[in-house]
Every structure is written in C-alpha cells, then in structure tokens.
Length: 69
Image (cartoon, rainbow, N blue to C red):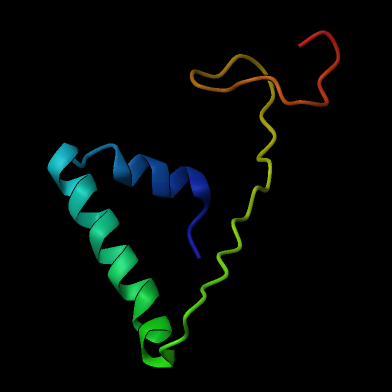
C-alpha cells in the first residue's frame, strides 16, 4: 500500500477531467457490491481520520483540538 504522500504526488499529474473520471470510476467500483444487495437503505461510513502534519504545509489547516489555532 503506497503512502498517502505518494498517492497525492501521483494525483498531481491528473488534469480536472482525469480527476472527474477517477471519481466516477471509484464510485462505480465501490458501489458495484452494494448494487447487488438491492437494499432500500445505504449506510455510508466516512473515515475522518486526521493526518497530522508538522511545520507549515500548503493546504494544512489547524485542527479543532489545536491550541492557539
């Protein structure tokens, strides 16, 4: 399993349309097993794991538990 940094580096080479296509492909693949169940209700569990960063990184935001954020 590649690190999250490797995945983000690879995704930087995608243009906007490639990102849209990847999202569609991922959703279709992820929902394939769900569609076979034919259930009227779907429970989606979103992982909100925090990835800690140290220092000043572009795009990084202070978390809810950060003192002086």
